[in-house]
Image (cartoon, rainbow, N blue to C red; front, side, top):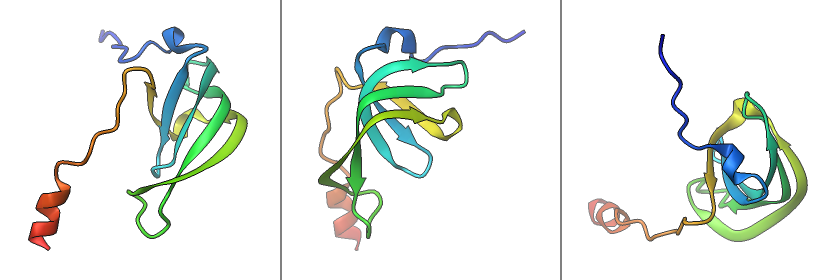
Length: 100
């Protein structure tokens, strides 16, 4: 019998800010208030980080306040704590520009 490996213990993230990425690329940040075994997630003070409509991989500075949100577990791709995360410059952008 295979044992389950827990990558992140969401119980430790209760009442802390997390980033949730959904299938399709949408991203939100909010305070984790609850979750279940299907990874249905409840976030408070939720804010969606908007992407450029012409380039879905490029983020804009625009944000959309959503408030209290229930995220359906089947659509959740990634849940990560915000503490300890830092956005860095893409090291491959220069190489892509040289190829084009």
